Amino acid sequence: MNMNEAPVVVIISAHSEWRAVREEFATVPALVGPYGEWFETGIRNQKVFFLHGGWGKIAAAGSAQWALAQWQPGLVINLGTCGGLAGQVERGAVVLATETLVYDIVEQMGDAQAAIDHYATHMDLSWLREPYPMAVIAARLVSADRDIVAEEVNWLREQYGALAADWESGAIAWVCSRNGTRCLILRGVSDLVSAAGGEAYGKPQVFHDGTRRVMQTLLAALPGWLACARLSEA
Image 1 (cartoon, rainbow, N blue to C red):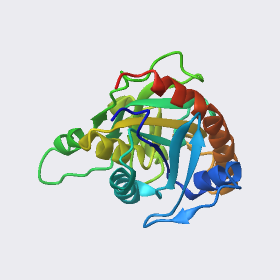
Image 2: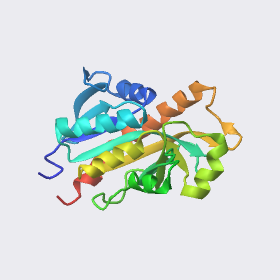
Image 3: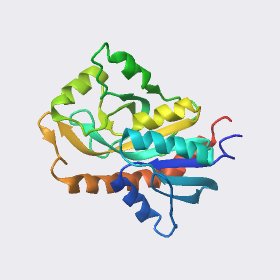
Image 4: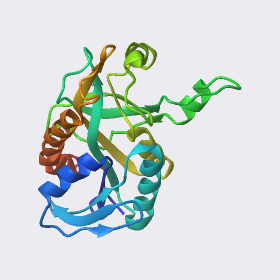
């Protein structure tokens, strides 16, 4: 089965991200699965399932595996937000993940690097043909079950070459890789964090406003990304 015959699954993680999606697809009825709402629609003659997978690595991994079993997609797309490291990336920039890495692994009995390497995923994007429908920064995304800690900004940049971080992309990419399913992760920078603190910390409306802008941009470009994917080899 090639990707044109198989459906596409779009996983949305955070509640704020999902609200933005439902605003764009307000007339499409949603059903409820084990992880959250989902609905089916058509984009460029392609069957697409949108799934609210939930926030954090546990929900991300579980919902991704459920979606793969439920719909046998040819492609999983994760659209969402990320926090940017101030000075490394601009607010509103879109990161195309070329690699994912989970950095909040602590190993007391030995070297944590082996575990970090185990959960790192190289994204094979050879099936994705240019030109892309929007400007992106192709880069590594790092994930943890926490927001970026201000005191770790310099460490994340120096240790992992990070420019942005999120909660879920590492888990989604890893599950898709284990299942041999193509995966596209696009994350827009909703807010910035520096060594002095995060501009959204203690100000959740900053995150919500940034999320709405990011999701509108990503959803508008989604038909173009599907067109790029259709040019791929079976």
